[in-house]
Image 1 (spheres, rainbow, N blue to C red):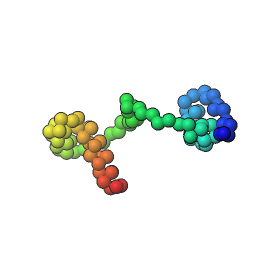
Image 2: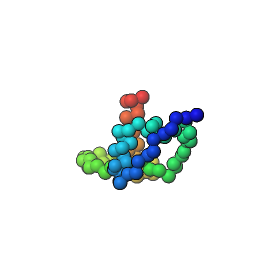
Image 3: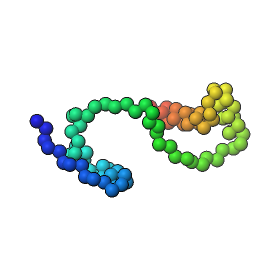
Image 4: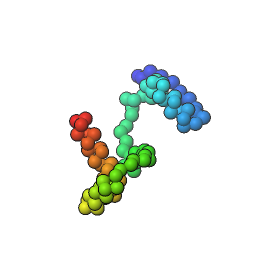
Length: 90
């Protein structure tokens, strides 16, 4: 038999709920032994717009490479950044 869990409080906002779960132990509220795996194939990661100044010649070279691969140049830049980070952390 599992021990009784605390009742999850009502939250006035998403920010309040986020702050609660960041500071409280969820195991007091959720029986994780009963958790089931879930897939969210349409969920896209949160992105943030940044400004990045590049020399025009470099940007043009990136666009040429992206065109050769038939991908948007910004996607190619993101892929290259991710590959480099993985290579250095792997």
